[in-house]
Length: 401
Image 1 (tube, rainbow, N blue to C red):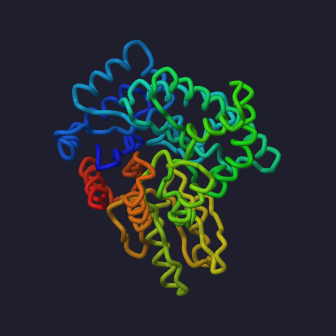
Image 2: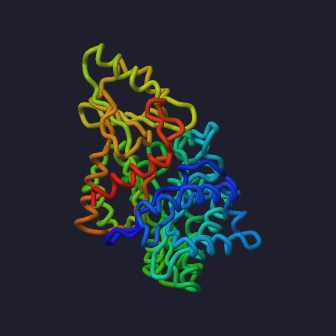
């Protein structure tokens, strides 16, 4: 839906289903009601999440045409795809497998090319489209720097092939689609510093040289193409977990010439670490229900000297809570954006408010996507009707505007 300069949707990764019939069924079940609530007389935007099987099925026979017909009949449009999770994402152990296959593989490249073809067919005229994707790979998989560098180099080559596909799509259709890397803790690109370093040390110099050679264009032009078609997906949960200030991140990205292609509106958990044993016991009891087995819930602890310590998962961090020497924990658990206080534990809702305020002052990114996908694994007392919960998220975001 359109809100001034912005398009707002919610991410389809909220719903289970790895095959197209399941995805389409979920859209039919939820989208018309939301449209009637929030845009009864206007077009309503959709954020698709297509797993690899669904991306293959949607391109078979006349499935894409049938979907486009349904969109037109219901005054709906698609402007973004979530291409981070490749495979199953619900009702099974996901954890670090969400990063596989990574960008060093042909599988990830071919999957993302399919997503680009689908989005090009669905994207309205005179709108740019975003495909968010993984932060290259999962850092703990690489035990030495040689392996890590090899993964980054190969991933860079695949991203350049992706840029060539996106250039070709724009030349043929006039549709500008950008691939937006989504940093998160323990990803190969875990924060804004690592993302900027990847652009400046690999993607622009090495990737630019490669693209220049392949297309027979100047290095300057090649770099312009890269910066046009590869950007950042700013997930407010992920950046908050890394203790990154939105104002500082935006300025550093501006100086580096890297655009934000999509903002994902999401909240993390945060815990102020008190000194007393009793307060730590209370915090431990409150956090235990969030240490569930489906998703990774990385924890970053901020030390008194400003340094950070990262735990790979909340299950790893909790045994260290009593002895932790830091001032605060930030926990990668996508909690509802409309709640700030979880009793002892808080959310990073304030970071969302800050970023949305900055967006209103300077609309640097028009594509906004609410991304709370953890409804099925929330602590029992927090589980509510899904339709009502999605509506509450829309209500809260709209109030910020």
